[in-house]
Length: 102
Image: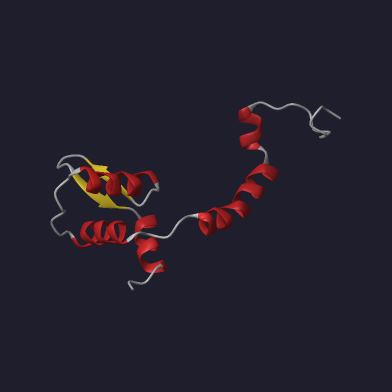
């Protein structure tokens, strides 16, 4: 038993990633992460709907850029190159469908 109270031998990060028990636990934790994720704000919803529908985005001032970057960090939208544009991801579409408009 080690100092953390576990009987498992020390593993490298690569060994942990390949471990089937670790993968099973991570798959089971995914719904928990979705439950803890905060709901979309009205600005985030508006941004994702505009990207999805191909409408013109609002000017990229500071508050609007925060909305765009929060959607990017959460995996709802990404920037595509040539031509440079915002693209909604499957996770973004799912978030829009999961939370109906008020």
